[in-house]
Amino acid sequence: MSTRIKYTDEPMEFTIIADDLPSPEELRRRLRKVRVTVEVDAPTVAVFRKKAGRGRVAYRRMMGRLLDVYAARELSARGR
Image 1 (cartoon, rainbow, N blue to C red):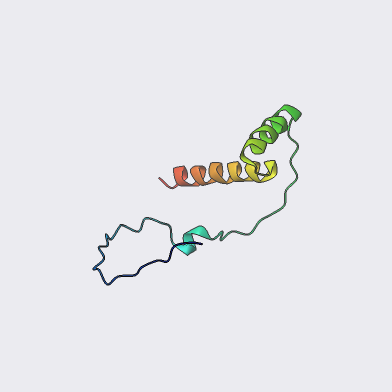
Image 2 (image 1 turned 90 degrees about the vertical axis):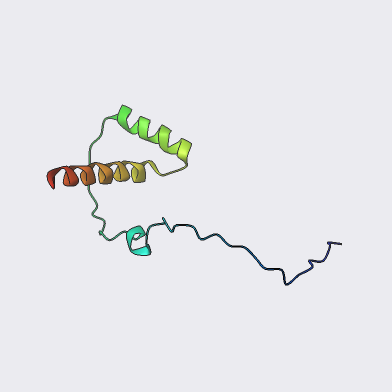
């Protein structure tokens, strides 16, 4: 049998920490997805499959995310 919890009226001390989490709007994907067909060399696909298998992620999703990051960097570099 488990022991019972004894509650008291002791004052509690709290520390307020900075909220550095992104807002829900920043977490939500705002762009719609577009299907594309791409021909990629077999060794390239093998690399993505191997890395995706380690991270337990779909290799196509990993390839898409890589393209997203690349495009975002390109857009920010052009905006400078």
